Length: 263
Image (cartoon, rainbow, N blue to C red; front, side, top):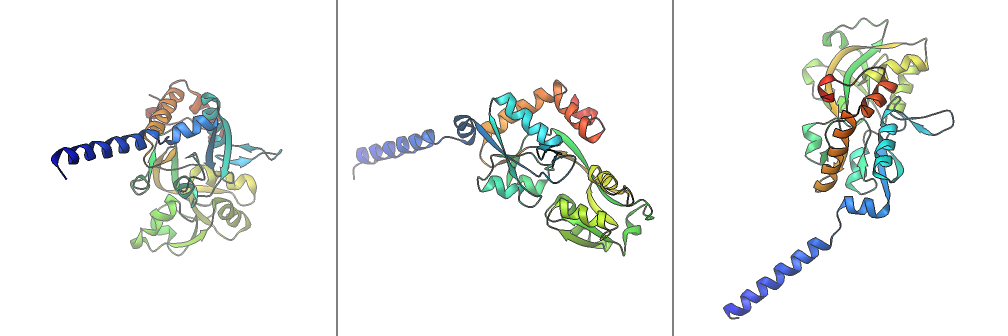
């Protein structure tokens, strides 16, 4: 093959590659073409996601998802999920994005991308109010309920030196049921969920005892979708600035978003 033929072949391959790349619609294009967005949201973790008396989705994550769909002029489809299935849902294209108390962590950032934080979550170990727990050593010998695959599960599992005893449940709903029914006197989850247990069963009020950490909550997107991430970032910034995301959070969680997030 002559040099001229090699050059011509190289150009042809390059053009074909560019055409193929250009022809492939990215996820943002797919969403806008479908005029629908599929959002993975756990509807069993009040007050972030739950069903109201009419069996309609409600909660802070639900209203955040509804606001996003409305602002973008899209039909909204909720994809029911749990803590363990949120990320696989976007990786396998069962959902377009995740809005479901998804904490930003270095481990998760290796497998999905995140938007700018739209809310915050205080991760704690909560116990019955009557249980005397002030710090980590007080938890030794006590069984701590935790939802499988959550940041709390990961964090407590890695605390080898604290000799913690964990009881894992498939999702937050079964974990809360265990606490309400007396199967567990301690649980590792968000401070909001801990406080909700007493609402379900006033005879067994729980309270946050030990702070694990405070996480930023963000929208999860599969890797390789920079245009969608950019558009979501613009949306988050606009709705933090206009106060709508803060209004949603305060409505369901009873407190303002961190001041630094609203600046």
